Amino acid sequence: MEERTEWMRHLFNALTSKQISRNRHFATFSKGWSRLVHKRYRAVDALRNEADRLARIPGTSCWVSESEGELYFHLQCPRLHYERVVVLLGYEWEWLGQQSSIQALLKVKSLE
Image 1: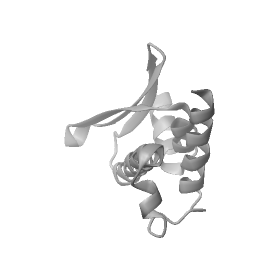
Image 2 (image 1 turned 180 degrees about the vertical axis):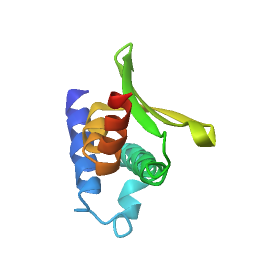
Image 3 (image 1 turned 90 degrees about the vertical axis):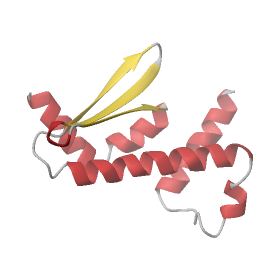
């Protein structure tokens, strides 16, 4: 199982660094474990895009919690009555935590 997790991490890193064209290799991503990684990549990238948009609204914050060995990413915007909680894998959080909009929102939460 650890080998598969490491393989999934490498594929996710290749997708996030734009080393692989999702369009050119779409047939590869439509089967097996590649499909799972691709689906998770799209979800995490959409979460980053949401954070980019919501970061412009005052009061928006995000934080990470852990429960029973799982990481939970919380994105909250009280002005829009919006809250989203997503379960992340470790390597997904590593990438997401490096994004500038996420770092800015984490600072907002730590100042509160």
